[in-house]
Image (cartoon, rainbow, N blue to C red; front, side, top):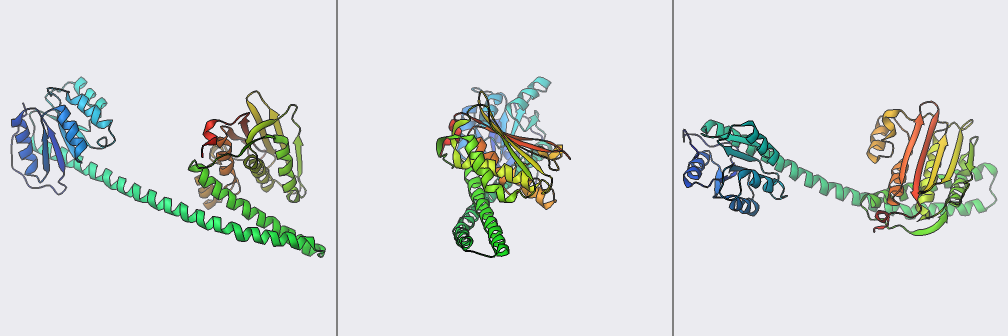
Length: 384
């Protein structure tokens, strides 16, 4: 039996929708009077099943739930409401005459937000319901803001993809004209300038492709174009494309002892190798830098390693260099350990094949970026 002491009061500033669950009409009426005088909108349920139905049918800000009910006890009702996405965020105040520690622990385990002990003190009821309504309103506000931010982020991504996609055509055209210019007999200095401009244009095209591919892979919209390919041949093509950037650096490749022919998206994996090599070139000395590319056939697949003698990466940043958001924040702090979205692209492309990627590094001695691919890509990598 629920006992109350006083019915006086003034309306709450934050009045809410309260569901009162009690099998005794007198208790429901008394609790309802106490809440309504404070401005709350009150609905009632006589047992656990009715409480679940009412909570699911109309939104509530707080549920006052008596523990002792004729069908389902309050703990079970609480568990079911908390496991439902429609009602899981609603604060539940368990009303109980039980003061034992075990009873309270059962309520906490069931997901109760707070407790009211019989006999009910009106001021205690007022404050606990007020706080619960406030918490629910804050949750609703955060949820609304989150949905709005997600919509804005979706619009931003769409706009970015449109702009970046539209950049590809003029960049491709510029590259084509520069290639035509190189076919003519130009003075040595002019030819070097045109070749440099062409490499820069190709770099921009790669950047555009990375931005678009990262967006698609993050959303799981990339379908792999699978074929059997020798990883050594992909490495050779990558080295050939980066040859003009070597300058005084030493770049070597270790031939694998066994076949490294596997099934993968050759275009994506070549870009992964090229990005890792390009990153190593970027961060090694142009006069005495050394870069070694290793390919190893293993029982479960193929491992590719790109090792350099660059400045290395501090331990606290090694697990973050593949993260797109770390790339952005590190650039703001002038902590640059990779070029653009290259490493983010590498991570997503390798994981799309069911592979793994990582880095080992010592500050002042260099870094070794590696990735492993299975002989056959996992199913998660082939979903469109």
